[in-house]
Length: 302
Image 1 (cartoon, helix red, strand yellow):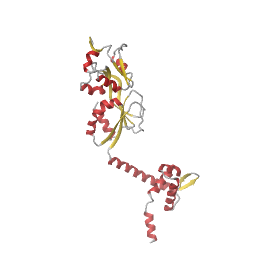
Image 2 (tube, one colour):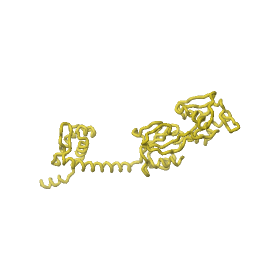
Image 3 (cartoon, rainbow, N blue to C red):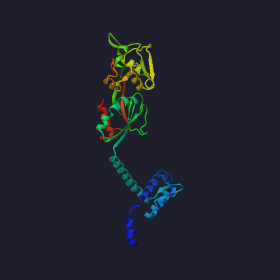
Image 4 (cartoon, helix red, strand yellow):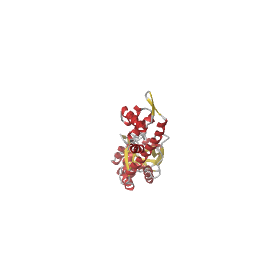
């Protein structure tokens, strides 16, 4: 009877908890660090390793002061446990991904998000119901270690060179106003329509150089006597233009829907301002991934 019990014991696997404690202790060479990583006490890790050694009948560690070092038997077990747990971990991750929708968090500059991306988002959801994508407003510098997977940014600042950058579209800007205010704010000259010197300019604190940049790229001269009004955010200036309060500098993709709806007009058209929007990511998209499908859809809009 004892021989049968010994045979069954020789075929049984050690306790998974003990193997997990052993693997972390071997990797960190320290029972206290293993305890911290596993959220256990030092005593619990030490007991688990001791019971594992008793079960196997060999010493797994040499204990020297506060550190522990693998014996030859410990090295053999560590290689096997590391490979086994690694395979379990990879399979579990793959099954979790298979069992739930692909999830992404994309950060987009606020005005572009509100006036261009969100109105088109139902079309993306209808095209890719299997994807779980969350939209977040954000601009300027970013960190992909803070819960953001992708970002849409204008290249008016320097981002890290190691980021993967996919151009989406160039920025086109031009003066926009309410259709009923065109005659008041614009005049017809020998070279076509021109902005009246006294037309009120709508400015914004988040893009204070918008007017000066447009004047420069459009080859227009500045009018020092022009009245103006400054708003806290860029989309406030666009909404003020819709309300007829003056003329705002409108990036094409942030005003194209209002132009199509007859809420705004651009009497002087649009011209490139030398910048553009890019889709940023920590790495290139894997074929067929949620990142790749989103990037393909964004490209189709431009």
